[in-house]
Each structure stands twice: as structure tokens, then as C-alpha cells.
Image (cartoon, rainbow, N blue to C red; front, top):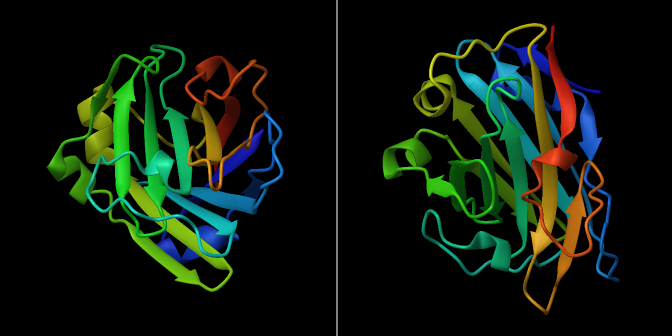
Length: 200
């Protein structure tokens, strides 16, 4: 079970346990190595950093909630109250730090984050010739707007999956943290999310 470590400062994110995004459930020859970290930034929200050892990632979209999965994208899907609701959040980012964010119970029944909610996610990103990373803070205030009052603290269990994707034919690939047993590419399958727990 992945452990989401409680941290006091953003710079501690890389001290959290690392997870690999290396399940290429639908094959393909293009398989960049990707990984990430997740922490609970105390009193602020969930901090997610995602990284890929990928040179020249496809990156064309520039507006919030654009379909960045058609670029090369790193993604976090988070089901934060799994005992009460099937609703989950998807955060999808390209190498420019452009965020597509939604909330809902399945692929077709989702609502986009508002402009204000997107801005509150404090996106940072970086890139060099053979590596790129993105980071997002999912604020407790946004979590409460979506789920209602929700306590995230030591011992809280959530469900999640993390992804590396491009639906572009030039770089098409689909990788996940937790394996997905489904005949065609689809990340919007909460039944294949993995368990995670918040720890000190």
C-alpha cells in the first residue's frame, strides 16, 4: 500500500516514498520511465509531483482544461472518500504545467474545475533535454468544495492511480502505477485504483 507522508514544506515532497508509473497495460514500444511522489502538506492540501525521463515531450495545449492527454501528460486520479462516494478527482498536466482537472463518478459524468479552483492548485513545472516534471497542490479548500467536510490526516485511507499518457499517434502510450485489466486504454476505471494511506 502506498504511503502518503505528512510533510511541513513543499521541498520535502521528494522525501516521500516514490511510486513508479510503469504498467504499460496495452503494450506499445514507446515506454518512457515515469514516477512520482505524493504528500499531505500539513494544513494546506495534497501535494503531487510527477516526473518523466522523456526527451522532447509533445506539448501543444496552453489553456486550462484543454485536452492535455493529447499531448504528453502526467496524471493523478484521486478518490478521497472511497467509503462514502465513488467520485474522484483527475489532475492531468502537460510539460508546460497546463492543468485539466475534473470531478465525478466515471469518465462521462464529470465536471471541470472552475478557473478559481485551477488557479488555487499552485502548479509548478520544469524541463531539461531529457526529463520533465510537474507539481500540483490540491488544496483542502477545493477538496471540501467537492466532497463536503472531509478530514485528511494520519490513518486516512484513499484510493488512487497515477498515469503517463499520450493519445497522439506520434508518441502514443498508456502507463499506470496500478495495473488495469481492461481490453482497451481507459484510465477512468476506479475499480483498478490502488489503496493508499496517510502516514507521518
